[in-house]
Amino acid sequence: MLDLSPLEKLVDAIQNGKWKTAEDLIKLLVEQPTGRSDLSEENFKRRIIKIIKDEYMDCKKKTSREKVTFALLSGHQEEYNEEIPELRDRLIEASQIFTDELCHGEETISNKASDFIKTGETILTYGCSSYVKRFLLKAAETQKFTVVYVSSGSKSLDSEMVKAFSSRQSLRVVVIPHSNVFAMMPRVTTIVVEPQAVYANGGFMAVSGMHVIALAALHYSKTFLVCGPTTKYSPKYGTACDEAFDKIQPADDMLPSTDKNLLGQAYALNSLYDYVPPELVTLFITETGDHPPGYCYRIVREIYGTEEDI
Image 1 (cartoon, rainbow, N blue to C red):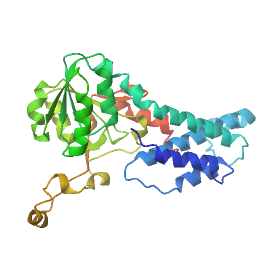
Image 2 (tube, rainbow, N blue to C red):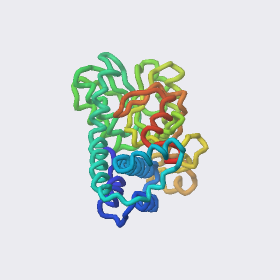
Image 3 (cartoon, one colour):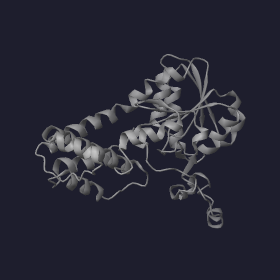
Image 4 (tube, helix red, strand yellow):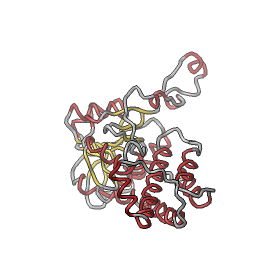
């Protein structure tokens, strides 16, 4: 389930914050500290700021249509510093509509499952993902197929996913270690995974180990689907050299905690994220539809605005 707590803070600033103009509100939101390490909170801010600018311009069009037309034709950059009495109420309504869309996003994506999964196919997935889980369970309502779940190394997360899939009689569940992915790939029809973040160039950030799976899928010419909401789309251009991929996590799943001598002698690097380039992806599936990696930049422009707005 998508964590909406960062969005709730932004909506609270709209409702109860001390601001008079759209410019004041934008500054207030930008100055709010970011408490998460991923890109989701930054993306929420960008979406809300885009909503603020759109609502501000809609209000101005009603009061001074000629001035707005002149500004657009002359290339004048709007400063958003005019006080508009009804702006707060309009923003509260618009932010509520945006929140409702996010809450139903997972259901919208899962409803597309029958278009991509058919009876008799073998679907491989990796990582604990609520979107992928719901996507596959929705397909299982009308289709019978096999799910190959690649163990992530976390017993609690793995058991949660396997238990969910095993609850459906129409699903045959096979669990394999990550080292067996290449050997299993010839039997697989489609790979379905969730991103941590999607970049404007069509690449995406995912849990560590995803790049190897994507390379195996490319080698055997398998369909590679990425399911996730547009709130994970970032205007940044991803590369494997990005500092976000330098993060590591505790090595508890790699080394036995009972062997104290081993823990003292070995230095284990357990990376947190992988970068998967766009050429390894077949399609992205979002609440607005499905599209190839080359379309990501246009999606980013639609939801965040121009480069100046971003």
